[in-house]
Length: 423
Image (cartoon, rainbow, N blue to C red; front, side):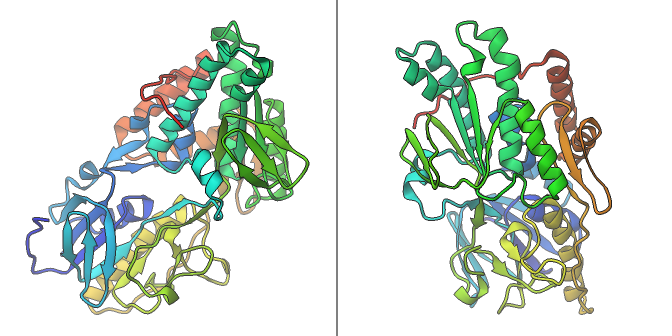
């Protein structure tokens, strides 16, 4: 790997998401050697992936080069690699480009889409966990609009214009609202030979309300906003299969569609090599203590979505969103320096800053500890928080410009089929 030997402790970080990046930044230029490994050379701002999928933003607006993040830290190195295995007995990481020794290992691999063992759904539906996947969804949506224009039968046209989103969490709700805006604002002006009323957007949620992790007030407001945009919301409905043409459910409902976006859940992305007892059943997350140490190991840590840290306030682990990952990354950096300096470790405590989701233009919901509200003010707060959370000044400027342009012109300018998608 051409990593120079060092007289200071070597810390290997697997994953350049929110947890891994914030951990690395907190140890920048400290007396350690940092090696960040990732299969992509960029950090993805996942909360805005849905805007890439719905043509609101270009991918370079929400992605940022990992080397650029680390460029001012002389003690840091980045390697583009797939991590294949951890060998804790040798304190080594085996990757696609070689084997690397470590003194401390930080696993921040995040999650992957959970299909709950259904191979047919996995083969035919569209996940949205990465930039390439978001671009695939964008291409498919736009291709289906073009195919609907020349469809030979009304049945085929309906299939192209029928969009099914499975999962009523923040990802599903936000994407449904964004596609509804394409239907309401773009199609009537640019697709004169299509009737926008023929476009149907179905949001399917297995529980009794959308946004299940949010308050009932937020769920109710979100459903009202979705319906006002023309989204058809189905609660208490679970998808049992999708064969590429027909969606079947546990109820009488079925849908003929060319587009199914699967946002029904995630599962951890653990790495081969650690003991099975270290992984929480069903969720596939590493069981960690409040120092973020993986169960059974003193020098291996897990942070972010891959970490299952049960506490009194969060008996099922912390929510798999950006804030716990950011806070755990920064906190673990301090604790590892305490370990190196042979000082006592401190227990991690998550500060919940609240939850928010947007449902299109002027519509959002915000859940804070003592306040819950929705509408324009919530939408403004959502925009400000996400804008300031983006990595890099350039990205903030570009996203702000795009949002301003889209708001004034009722448009989504990134409607380009750069890379046609084939099922």
